[in-house]
Figure (cartoon, rainbow, N blue to C red):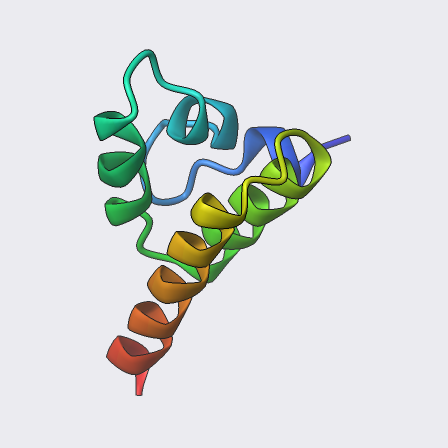
Amino acid sequence: MKNEATESTESTSLTPEQRLEPPTNHLIDAGIATIHDIATLRACVAYENANQQRVRILRRLEHRAKEIWTQDK
């Protein structure tokens, strides 16, 4: 059974944990910037909500979602 929060890798081969828990904070921006689909974004939001619940990261994810939705129109 696939767990969307840990195994969604449609944008790249990175898991939500790899995107949001890198060794340096600068890589979080890169991890979020390389999300190109809503499924991966949702998996990252689910991961963040289940683990750290960092408001700053959730806001970045929200901003990225708006960018993706704008591009899809």
